[in-house]
Amino acid sequence: MPTTKTPEALLQRLRRGRRFVITSHTSPDGDAVGASLGLARLLRGLGKAAWVWFHDPVPPLFAGLPGADRVHVGAEVPSGFPGDFDAAIVLECPTLDRTGLEAPLGELPLLNIDHHLGNRLYGEVNWVDSAAPAVGEMVHRLAHELHAPFDRDSADLLYLALASDTGGFRFSNTTISAFEAAAALVRAGASPERVTTWLYESQPVAALRLLGEMLPSLELHDDGGVATVALTREMFARAGAEPGDSEGLIDHPRSIAGVVATALFKELPEGRWKVSMRSRGAVDVEQVAQEFGGGGHRNAAGCALDGPLPEARERIVSALAAARRTAPSHG
Image (tube, rainbow, N blue to C red; front, side, top):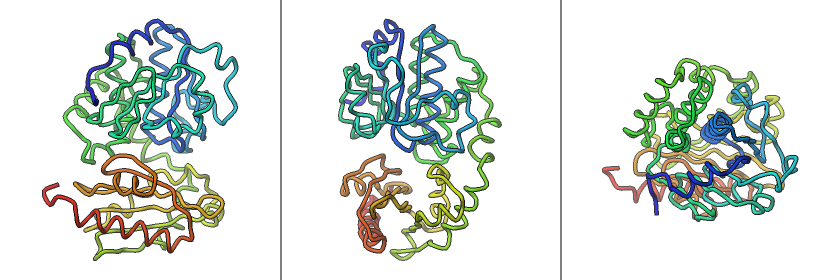
C-alpha cells in the first residue's frame, strides 16, 4: 500500500550497509538523474560508498550536474559487482525491467523507492508513495530520517529532481509537500537560479535544431484537444542530436491553447516507436499507456508500439480521445 512514512526496514538497511549501487529507469529524466546523484552524494556524506549505474547515458542537458561524470553507463556490471555491494537502490521504477538491468540487479537485495501507483513491489524493501510529487522529494525525506548532511550540490540535485518532475512547479503534482520540500532544500543551500539554468538554459544547440525538425510534424486531433508530434531517426541525424536531446520537447505541443493531451512518437530500431504522453487535469494517460503495455502517472506516461507511424499515431490518438471524453469534468 502507498505510504508516506519511510519504512524502518529501509532505514535499517541503509544504516547497516556500507556499499550501494543506485539505479533508475532507462532514458533517465530529471527526477531519475537528480534523485540518483543526490542520494549517492548524501550516502557518501554518511561514510558509505555509492555508485550510480544507468543502462542509458545521462541526457546531455544534465551532463554538467555534480557527479554526472561518475555515472556507470551500459549493461556491463561495475567493478566488484555483485560481491562488493550490500544492496541495489532502485528509484522511480514500477517494475524492475524498467531499469534495463533486471538480470544483474536481481543478484542483490533490492530497495525499491518509487511514486508510481502501479509499482509491483519487487524489492526486499518497498517504499511506494504515490502522493509524492517526485522521487527526489522522497529522497529528501529519507535523508532527513538518516540525518544525512546536506551540501549545496546535494540540495541542488534534489531540488532539480523536484522541479523537473513538477514541470517547474506547474503540473498537478505540485502539492504542498512539493513546496515544503523546495523551501527546505533552499534552506539547505539549493539555488533555484542555478537549477533553472541547468533545466532550461543549458540546452545543447542540437536540441534546438531537433525542436525545429519536430515542429513541422505537429498534428491536432479531436477538435484541437489532442496534439501529436514525431521524431524520426532521420530528424535526429539532420539535427546532429542524441536520444537525450529530446528531453522536454513534448512540453511544446502541450503548451497549445485547448490541448489537454499530447503524444510524442520517437522512432526506435526495427520499426518501433517510443510514445511519451502528457495530459492536463483528469485526463489519464497512464491508463492509455497501460492499454499498450506501458505505464507511468496520470499526467505523464509512456509505452512502445510497432509502426508504421500513421497506424501507431491513429491508435494512440483514438485512445487519448477516449480518455478525454471519459475524464471527470471537474478534474
